[in-house]
Image 1 (tube, chains in turn red, blue):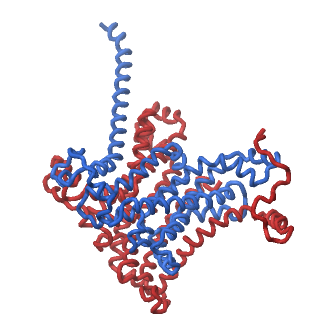
Image 2: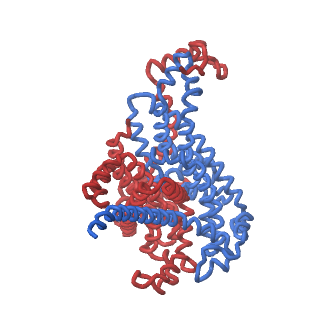
Image 3: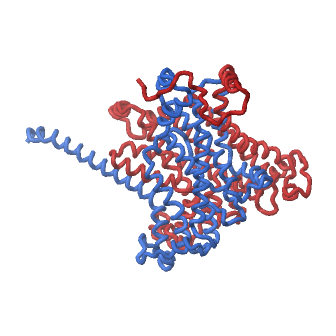
Length: 336
Length: 298
């Protein structure tokens, strides 16, 4: 059948590599040892496990450790010893009004970003499934360009679109009829000077970057539903709204669940877009939890211990959501 | 008359149905064009502004196209009059970091994917779940510890440090996606090769690798985009040495310094964004399969 592979039997340990300095028979004994203890999969996993352990898991443990220490600039340069301070960092965080403000902003902005991205993405996915083949290919490849745009570029572009001098958003809003909320008061409106407009702009960036992924995933799910189901629902007199909630949504529920949890994780931890829109770390009243933690760590004077407490709180919140995501994925059969 | 109605009514209702179907199709196509317009507009506006002289972008009534297109903005970016270094310097940094980390993560992930797709062993499910969780850890939390570690290892202001981080953070997604591609290769092919006397290494090189290659391309695209776009680690690690900046940090720095020169900022952003968009259009078809296989986004 497959005759392209030629080779002598028993050729497994042919001396292809450099001559080994190990005692004769070592190689064979090693091979036998690996075989007997079924070590092959573990050996194959070793490099990835080592890299992930060193560069992701170990730092996570360190953050947890720093959060119980007074780690700051003197400790970083080694001019003062690191001391354990118990829960002092956490008490300071919990009594810090700025922490609660930033947490509130994170929660509220995720509460706007997640549903908007999901609704827009789902609508586009439904639209793509009903378009002709060529039109669907065109719209989806153009949308993928939005998804592929780097977050840094997208944020800078949206700041430019919404800039008070020469930006196209303020111009457009000022030209809108007043019953649509338009008018001259939009001329020179700043989108970055206060939290509400800044996060409105950030939401626009997040939705623009995020809807294509949702649309393509929903479309992939829709393709798995047999067309007869929709047809019979239509014959029974169901409108698009009823068909979506009675047929589409129940069948695609696992996909929606995963997309929802992923969006929550991404949008609760959104960093780059907000960092650029609020103008780096200038405006403290526009910090979300991630930015506040970053500023605590890297603005002078750096307070790595305090920032680690914030980082650990952020990590725990995301881990709780992640557990939901893992369970949804496992239920969907991802581990098979 | 009643006869006439009886004869024309099925025809007219058929015609009405045809018309409504046409109208519906036209409406759907119109909506599709609207979605395409919304997806494209910011990219279009970036490129258009990059070609506008200052007098044209700093106006009260914006025009979609430059009436006197200029290359002056691009010249300023490529000459490096703002940051002091030409654009090529940053492109070179970005490509170096990206290519090396993509190669490293693809190789390491392929080994892990083979283990997870071809073997049943004790910690398999645990490892898979660990990957899912690790992928979700917030980077702005880990960056604190990595900054402190890399400082003592002399890996700050170094592209090597970024390569290490990008390799590690690309792994979970890459392994998950590659696992599906490896599992899709029929096991019988390898067994047939073994019967024909090929050792496991030979079966890997001659059978598995060529068949997994398309999947390897798709997954490496995701690792590529992650490394090319990455912001937080580059921002934190490359704090002081401008010459080491990668493109995202360069664009952000350019924007921070050049506050109001939107023509030059958009030119820099265009030179950063367009290569990745062109790359995406080229590998699109392969990508969509991968996009569905593994949930990714930075």
